[in-house]
Amino acid sequence: MSQYEQLCQRIVNEGTWLTNERTGQKCLTVINAELEYDVENNSFPLVTTRKSFYKAAIAELLGYLRGYQSAAQFRAIGCNTWNANANENKAWLANPHRKGEDDMGRVYGVQGRTWQKPDGSTLDQLAKVIDNLSQGIDDRGEIITFYNPGEFDMACLRPCMHTHTFSLLGKDLYLTSYQRSCDVPLGLNFNQIQVYVMLALVAQITGNRPKKAYHKIINAHIYENQFDLMKDVQLSRTPFDNPTLTINPKITSLNDIETWVTTDDFTVHGYEHHDAIAYPFSV
Image (tube, rainbow, N blue to C red):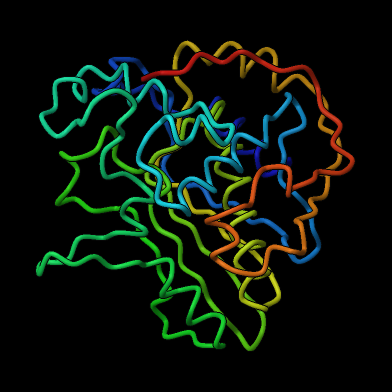
């Protein structure tokens, strides 16, 4: 919470107002933020100064790991964050690559699981990383990237948190995640949860020990219609201690994640929080 609050306060105090071309809204913006999560000691980074809907964030991560490309698929596992981008984004609605209602195009997990190669075949980046880490291999390229500039026109949204690099020191597993853009009031806690869970989950299924997760953000911002709620409400609240997270120990393989794992396999303990805050979402 201290890292989260420090970033929010930094944006309020030092940010620069810019107009975002995609949304047409002003954003208070800072460049470069670095957060660190202690996965080894199970300090789960849930925001406590407002209620965090962590199961939706975990559901979204599961959808990425499965390579989902439809908002309907995400809804089916408990995540509604893609409804608007799939069905209300005017540029995407007019895009000839859009296949119909709920289609998201080649975003996030689609790139992670079926990256298109020049010869027409596909590359499963996630399976390669899982296979290597399971064998104790770190080739200094245990990287999963969702960022494919050649296919931006085939997706409803460019990926925000776009690249994940795993590093193995003996049996100790680390994760460094890179994010180009972050809606701090709404998106950041989703992203924190996903970075933490990604390391914990990959360590569990590859037989390694999770250590630290490093989260690097380039453009961190608060939208103008979120500013007063952040400054006058959320930042005025006193944080609670971090909760802990338990992951079902029966999850032991990528196939498990693909076939039967649900958000019920992730249990948060000791989560105290203030009331929810209805921050507006910008499409």
